[in-house]
Image (tube, rainbow, N blue to C red; front, side, top):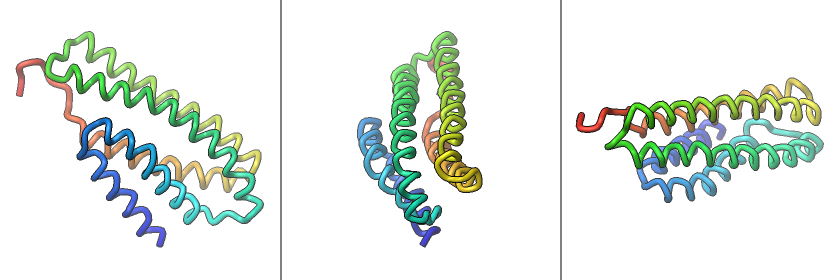
Length: 156
């Protein structure tokens, strides 16, 4: 069952990135959230007590992660808008924004690991953060696989 859910999650990502950016954003906010919760539920197999402690903290985490992800989405849209006329200055700005997103997400993960460890145990929190990291890596890979590399204007 776990593998089937992960496969469904991966398959939905492939389809998501084939669509335009606005459709992608809407699908990301609905389908992927639902799939992610199903994967977490199936993988973590929380007790009732753990579940009651985990989900409120998770909802806070997801809210902050969604705000942070809007920075990434804006950067991707900015890249797309400037792709055919990319300048050195704009490329520098875009990659620095990308680095900033990655650093901010790592800080957020560290902050919430501590919160999860407080309401669960460090082992259960570590397991969840491993799963969260895997999901984030799948998303990162899907995005990277569908974004073209930067090019100088006029080069095909």
